[in-house]
Image: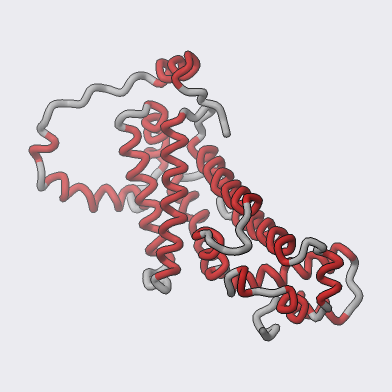
Length: 274
């Protein structure tokens, strides 16, 4: 493995004396680059040492647990970066926030394509209960970020399930995108993911008061030429072609949010944060 794909800053670190923290960070950075290009089982400590301009004993000095410990350290570094993808100021239209977050997420996925696929698909010899917990932590952190954007003080089980379902769909779509050699432009995939969120929120709103309240607050902020307006215009002809569906009996209204909260407090669901 040549060092051509290793960050220049990491290569320069091999030619000067580094502090303990700098050397450790350098080894993690180099390892993360290699793990992004190849599955964990295809990367050896010798590969990392060579790419970092260091010796195998030096790598062991910083990571006495060997490749597994180095892999977990690199994974945590990637996780920290991945979690930041969903951090977004809680202002402006909801779909605009989702768009920016997804753009960062897909850029991360594209940059770490091989490692991302190996990590989320599982089956790697480097996969352990600890690495699985790290990955699951990313999913939960992403869901918490999205729930903050929905601005619900005490999200109930249905709303949480909706958000986590969407996170799972985003993850699956990303893996399929990589598997199909990114045939679909990233911006097009991101737009479809935003539409998916809007549609899922709308469907959940039909029976979930918290989701309905989120939708009522979000819609006035959405511009007519934004994702929600465009989605509504695309869907309208489909509904007009089936007027009998709109002419049926009106559905029973969803219970008020206060009643739903009281029901959760009474024991049908804990309504607490994970």
